[in-house]
Image (cartoon, rainbow, N blue to C red; front, side, top):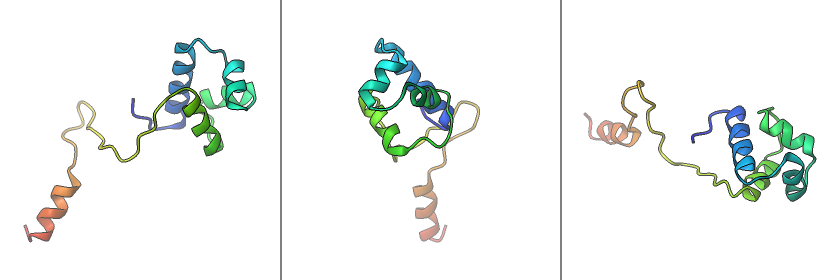
Length: 93
C-alpha cells in the first residue's frame, strides 16, 4: 500500500492492529500512548508526533520504505523516469 495521506496511514495502522487481534487500548499500552491518541491516528488526524507514529509502526511491525519508485496507477499513463530525462538532457538530446 502506498500511503499518500494521514488517512491512508491511519487505515493501514487500523487494519494491521485488527489483523493482530489488538484493540486500541492494548496497542496504546504497547506503544506508550493513550487509547485516544491511537484513535486519532487511525482517523487520520494530522499533527501526530512523528516519533510516536514511528514507534506505533514498529510495534505493529509495519515497514516504512522511503525512496522506492512510485509506479503509475492504472489509467495515469506510464511512470516518469526522471533519471532518463536528466541523462538525455546532459547528452544534449
